[in-house]
Image 1: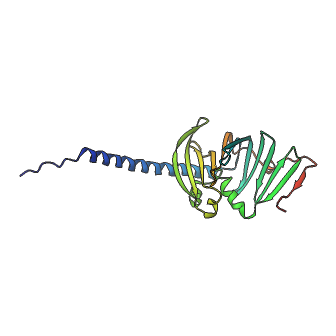
Image 2 (image 1 turned 120 degrees about the vertical axis):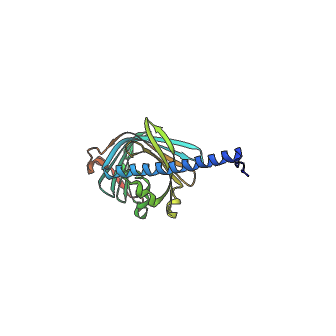
Image 3 (image 1 turned 90 degrees about the vertical axis):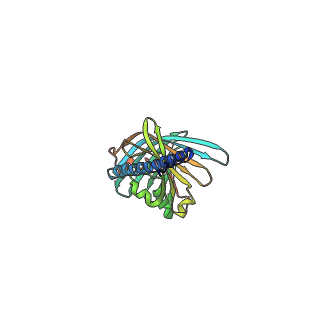
Length: 236
């Protein structure tokens, strides 16, 4: 006696097809994440510095207020794990911030004052946060963050992969709920960063007119202070 073929119901077939598509999408996403991190690895290997226009948008959730600053940034890496940075804001008011090692200097031209801060134990947090993505290999990010590929976006004509990074360190989570970084699909350079705080405040850092590995020196990332500037150390 010949058995009739077992017929699979249409809903069951659709369910199985949907499951297969989800599995393929998850696999493709994992592969793309590894490709993005690999691009960051290659970029980090040759990274010596950059210059760019910078726009910083800060949002304060409690009062639902947004502020914006713009200027120029220069990052110099004379050797691995030695990152130096100078940000010169021009709008809405002039000020400059220099970062090196565990020291931060903030210069206010209108006040003719430069304030120096020793980051001490918090210096490692600055290394992890402020310089995220610049010269940092994607493989290193895995050690400090849970990473998710969140999609593709085009920023200023640049195709990017958007990654969501949640800190693994309990100490870090006290300060940052999540990072988003937008990584160029062309060269693995980060072109935008967003810092989400536990308070729901955030800071968005956008870069344009980026010049990779320009001719920079130590003087390129130092504050240019005129004579007569008063030096303050608020921590003392």
